[in-house]
Image 1 (cartoon, rainbow over the protein chains, first blue to last red):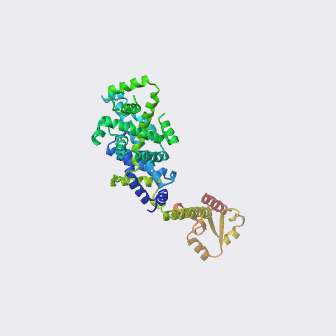
Image 2 (cartoon, rainbow over the protein chains, first blue to last red; image 1 turned 90 degrees about the vertical axis):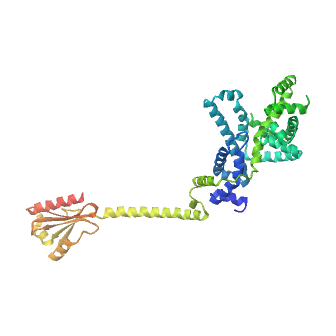
Image 3 (cartoon, chains in turn red, green; image 1 turned 30 degrees about the vertical axis):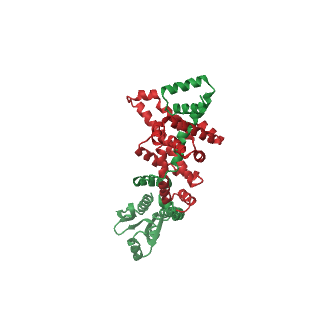
Length: 204
Length: 228
């Protein structure tokens, strides 16, 4: 297949080879999105979610203007499905009479999924693209070590203890560094007030 | 508490990394300085937004793992289900599809025409009933003889000689004929050759009425029964 434009045209025609190539190209993104740390699905569950997300691209192919939008689209779909799946699992666990359900109820574990579900559910391809650019710009403005520390905290959801061990840094310093870096990122995000306002509105 | 310490404490609490003492310290700070509530909310929102979206932006750059080969068929099936069979989708498939559509219409039209013709054919065919009779019988019997008015739905075939009459009798029914009947005065029989179910030909005879008038009525009845 030639250019992305040609590939997108072939996808719209329902070309088998084009779709196969697209599935191969986008599967890593779909799988990574399905492995969203908030969802913490098993690899098998994440694989199922990723495959489902890829099939959901079929009816959307006429709605995208360029091939790369499919990449962002599959990421939003897979993330959303993964987080919803985790929430469903937790709900089943509660409803299933599990002895830990009382503990779960007390902790109200599902509450922590609500903001994530709201954001993942409403974030569109354009938002994700803009956010990605802003984050890249913001992280590149940090010291590489601090950027890596923040990335591991936000992307991989490593705990302070894990970060402390990985970066050979006292837990107290981890906290201070994260808080400062996060503040810088927030300043950067606020430089795009429309996007920021939209993201904040997703939480309400 | 300076801004750095406050942000650090707020983030610890939000991220679930704080001890009970640290949580109490934050509550105390917020109670003493309610204006910091907004600051706390900002940290919380930033944390919520980024912990959800940062993994997504990172996922968009992922290059592994490879698509498992055993899941490929599932995806191919989804493509087929969405777009239909491959033959209908390829470039040639599109052209063929157009031709196929045209041929469909042509065949449908042709079929319809053939059906119409068949119906016309069926209507026109298999309807004629021929009644064979010697001309001399008509002349001899006068008013009592059979006339075309007696059997308006039948075709009266008159013969002057035996040979053509015999030939007519022995000829199989033509495609347009339903039946033919003739009087056999030599044996006092009425012969009825008719087409029955599925094109089968039936040859029947019945005793001829003794009088000319009776024969006329008998032929009329047979013709009428054959027309039903």
